[in-house]
Length: 109
Picture 1 (cartoon, rainbow, N blue to C red):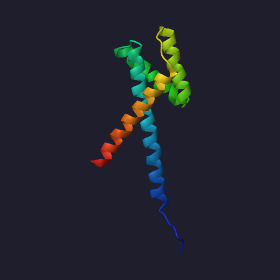
Picture 2 (picture 1 turned 60 degrees about the vertical axis):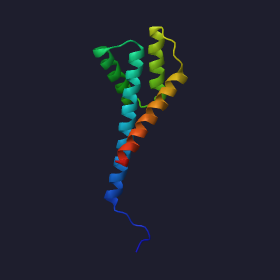
Picture 3 (picture 1 turned 30 degrees about the horizontal axis):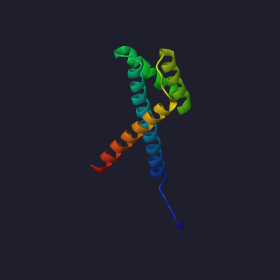
Picture 4 (picture 1 turned 135 degrees about the vertical axis):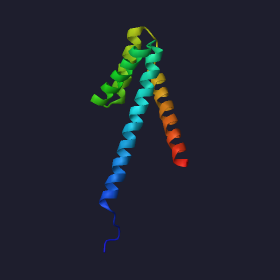
């Protein structure tokens, strides 16, 4: 008899849930970041919604934080708004912390 045994289906289920939760956390982070950036760029309503969708889709096509940050930085430069990469990174960390805190609250309930 094996020392350790696990039900493969439950292991795969847990792994699937873990991967999905990570995907949705990242998607939520990107949406909040894109709304923040779009708001700073002065976008509203439909223009803001299109900007958010474009940021999210570009991340899905090439899931790379650096590329997303570069894209947002280019948008700020194009609009003549001074923005540093450090500010965007701080915003990303703040959003991630807020999402993580919300998830922890859900698990407590």
